[in-house]
Image (cartoon, rainbow, N blue to C red):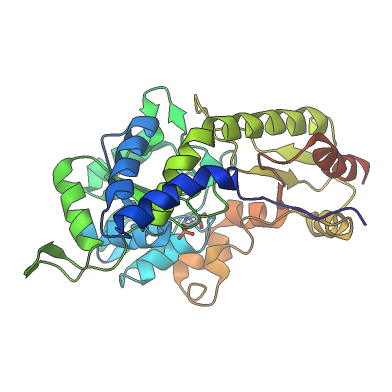
Length: 368
Ligand SMILES: Cc1ncc(COP(=O)(O)O)c(C=O)c1O
């Protein structure tokens, strides 16, 4: 049996490059609470991503939960069922009811044409996801938000480094939330960030992620502990040095898959959503009915060859027990997302994936 190939492999720079960063932490003895690496990484990420204000978090989920708190979102929030479960869980953790709306068949992002019908007097916000790093229809979403006076919080967990014609996609909406989880394009082992439009909002978010502390004796909100530690922030500084190279590797693997699979009957490679700079964070294919195998049979065939593709996003969030009783979670309300969840398979893509590895994947998909 050939060695396993997983859907992703975390990017790790050479270990010896990290030692000086650890030495600095040991010397300064600042382990957390907005220490020097935390401050450096916030600044460096603002520069790299082309955004003005950013608050680091210990993970993306706490970022989402805190973003909702920061904007005092309540009631109902319109969101997508076609995402990782943390998107909707962040709503439940705030006592907010998710209202699932179907996705666009081309991008698999929240379909703006279906949002208005889901708005009720209790709706206060929209939480779309830039799924696979492909930007949502941000203009259409903003127009609806403006008309109905709704907040927009983007779950941008997949969208590190993605740009549209105006710059970073992270500038859209009221807030955007990144994840730096091990599986992401840019990882800090665990981590995340909220992109904020102004210094005042960042200050409030910084307070919320530190128990609500304003100074030694003043607590202004029931905040949480969402701070990124110095070790994660230091690792982020090192990762930033390597990220362009890692993205270039992903780009070439994406191009190789697209070329190899373009004439395979029944396999549709998901296209970009018009982004100017993509991040190639995932490689989703849709296994259509004219392919000789079902999606699950192809998934199993790859598995039998020690290749672990993943069915992101199956099951839909709306099919999990804590959501499926909600009227908006019914499959008849979500035909496009339901169909995509039955067809999608994410093929392995990561910087260390070598030509013999990707060829193993391609041979199986082509030869089924
Ligand atoms: C779309 C989406 N939202 C939220 C998260 C949660 O991020 P984290 O794992 O950093 O908490 C993830 C990934 O893990 C994700 O893929």
